[in-house]
Length: 127
Image 1: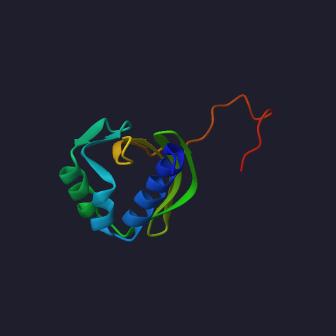
Image 2: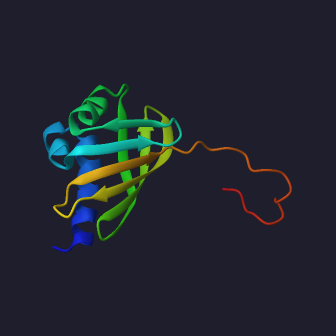
């Protein structure tokens, strides 16, 4: 298997094992020194143990499903449909992997929807 296929497979396994709360599998996907970053809150978690605990302790009945996963070499990106109860939010997750196929860095973007600025309604279609 080449790096791109391995990265795509790791991203799928990451989302699937988190969704199933299969923490044993989830743990095996991560490098010991994995770094997890959330740019919106400027939070960073270092290390597999801390990141695993963060996910295990995350509150609510959350669920996620991949909409699209792209990979190139030792990098992958996932567009995720995230839900907590009736609340839905899109997320974008970026993965960096080691040559051995372990996830070394995760950058998690949780964009908030907002109304567009005035003055461009003639150029766009709202959905």
